[in-house]
Length: 187
Length: 171
Image (cartoon, rainbow over all chains, first blue to last red; front, side):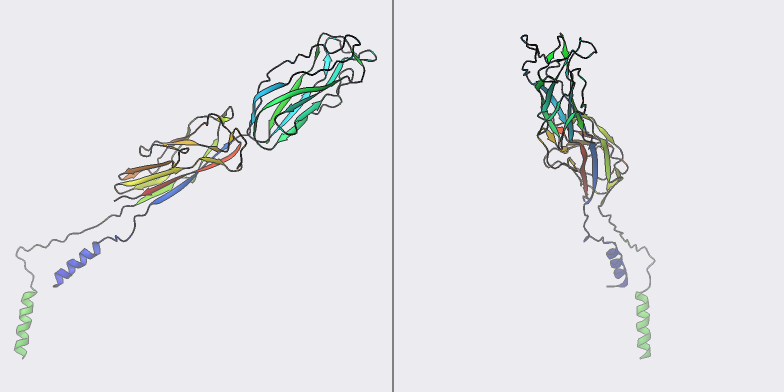
């Protein structure tokens, strides 16, 4: 082998690529983040008005037993922990006027409202009106759920009672109360 | 003895003399460029922000994502692009109550003209594309569109998923 051949051989060897190296895959990972806010939705009550009928017995004017049907609030949900609160005003004679009722009479009727189906135990509130309807306790009843809930809330009314046992109800064509149920998402 | 040495030297000199009369030598230079790929995200985190809800379910609305790729190219032929996306999962809620999901699926659509649409809800949700040399550096704009389950609401909180891109060089 002469010098020229050796030189050419040298050139050729130098140009041979390094085929031993792998053409390895390359990769990258991107993290995708998002958030969902804490939201509650309270459905519409099946009945916006609960008709109780006659409250007093015609025989003696005292409160009669009252057992109204339940009212459902469907389509309610919270996607986070939540608090359900319930509040009500006493049933108060709307047309009687601002004055206090005569002795041994009441123009207010107390009752208990329970909102069940959301928490266990259920949230409840009992009105604390005096014979004129003024409440001594205006703090709503509350109960908390630590996890998301999607349930029907059932509102039940019970324990109807005169502020003073045995007091008669003043006559009025319209005794009225407002019941408020609130859902609040945990912060 | 000296005479023989001189003669031998003369003969060697003749052999080594260059020939100037039309001889041509050709030297071929051979090179090679290795098939390689490179992928470097412009950002390692895509923040979609707050996901809107409708009735507690995910609102299907595209979220534009711009210039995801800082560098993404392959110089060979028959390169493979593989993209795998995982669902957005709640970072805090592991157990859900009935009626709720703790994950959000989405479709990932790129306007790069190569990778099409990816659905994180599909099993083995991988896009595999074979393509010649390409360079998407600074591109890969696209949209992320959350998918509504249709019945399930989603729990509140932070969510996180991943999009993994693998480029395999071809020949």
